[in-house]
Length: 227
Image (cartoon, rainbow, N blue to C red; front, side, top):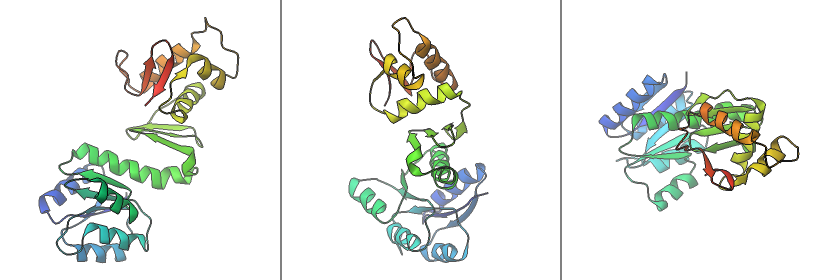
């Protein structure tokens, strides 16, 4: 069970974060003032911190900076409004992610799980360069695992190779010919519908709607694209 520190001077927000994350089986250390949170950080084995930006005593940026002097666990900032200046400031002192109030508890759970997964699970099986994350999709080239909304997707080697190639070419339209020749390592024939069939099966495993896929998009007459 992961230990997560939650700091927000608004008790209602702190309670909501605690309730949401306890439902996801996390162990929560909840605080509404900065000094108590700092004492906990220095005396407890934590796996992640969720910090409010605006606090009456010591602001979240300063606490984030203090954490980074000793620890490298993930830090998520809670803020009423994310502007570019605040985001840059937070990232510059070591924050990993932001979530804006008011937030959806399910989104909070997903962001927390994603941050923990990146830091504690993926990094143990390969370097950061071997992990590609696009939205809720995460694919690890090192251990051939794929996750969607924190659930592992069981892919065949060919399906994994197709998805990996598309992810590596994010934002680019990949033709069926290019995809086939790079995955199967054979010459593509115009009458070959192998790619289309595998894309269809891959979309089914990713729970895509056939008429309106959100992850693997068809660019008619050209090929496929992951945006």
